[in-house]
Amino acid sequence: TKIAIFASGSGSNFEALEIACREGELDAEIALVMTDKPASFVIERARQADIRGVALEPKAFPTKQAFEEALLAILREAGVEWIVLAGYMRLIGPTMLAAYPSRIVNIHPSLLPSFPGKDAIGQAVAHGVKVTGVTVHLVDEGMDTGPILNQAAVPVVEGDPEKTAQAIQKTEHVIYKETLQKLFKPVPANN
Ligand code: GRF
Image (cartoon, rainbow, N blue to C red; front, side, top):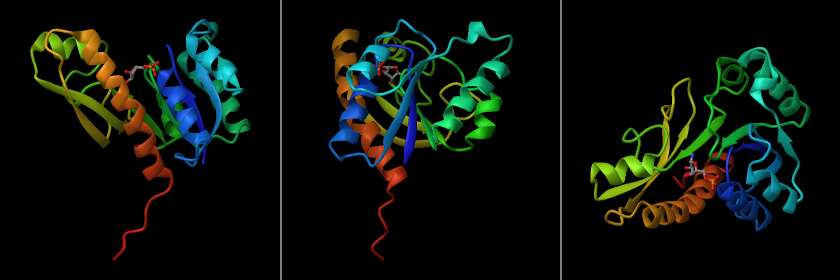
């Protein structure tokens, strides 16, 4: 299964997925990493992993649709079948959604529908929840909405967003590769 990973930041999820592919835990080929932030560290991680990095800035295009059409041309040319968002801080528009119906996946650092949007971990800690977690879901036109594929609970480290974030990140790096593997290699029911 050929996938493209979209990221806007550090790219630790990209790195975890790249290792999983290389070690045979995830039957997928990362055709490219796309970022809307050329200076983001994920591009450096892609370079280190010898994976094609594509930086495309929406502001270089007259409309969001033009941006997505340019991106789609690159994805089609690379034979990308699934889009995997990993810290991609933009909404996917109708042009992209129509081209990849139910083929775009996202990971979010909370138990959706609680705490959608930015700084989900900070929201959870501020709210005083005792348990938060990670959600993997299919992407629809909303923000952090769409059908939930998998979740894992992560205890909040009382009043310590940083320690809580570290625990969440460890969980993310496991749940994403496991969930994607089930998508790409459904295990036949032994009935
Ligand atoms: C992760 O917490 C992910 O759930 C959220 O953004 C963060 C990306 O982290 N969408 P990284 O860039 O993969 O390290």
